[in-house]
Image (cartoon, rainbow, N blue to C red):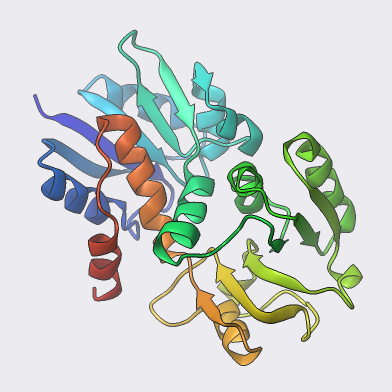
Length: 272
């Protein structure tokens, strides 16, 4: 039987993951099937077990089930532990599930490998203190920035998240209203403000000359935060499509032991 993989979430019909993994499989010659699973809240564990019983070998996990996957995993990677969420489940030879989180390494690989961004020694601001931000903190701090600042509308939430990661590197938290007078080399948007076409309330002068902006979200047209970067003099304005493909490539590698080439797949998605 062909090894089966899938992405599980709710909603799920919009997911680009099947297209991405099909492209990876064709490129690498790996024999596998990759589909979508729509699971109902409260029935995640059941849906996973049914999938595994039918030659399922691994899953990508998306909203709203990443914390469910974290709880279901028998063992977890360090980055999944820090994230408090799992986006990749791997069936081990002993029948147990290993949970990993590839979001952060996907972000870092997109910035560093695809765009030659220097994170070491940089002053980085990440907007938002929710799951998207938590999921990328460890790999960002592993890149050794000079300072990583988490800014959130509710300052206490940002400070608490920073305190949790204090042993991993130079990280601090503050409120959006405490950013006046500060400058950053890279600003990453980890909020969902873009869904409403808005941008977090940050100072106009916060981006250092030559600085970059990165929105973890993406769309068929430039996101609100990409447009903010363009209008505020960013040297480079990036959206999260590359991160999506890079996190998928890391999952593919964890499952198959083969690292696909991502550039062609990013180009494919841009032209779809």
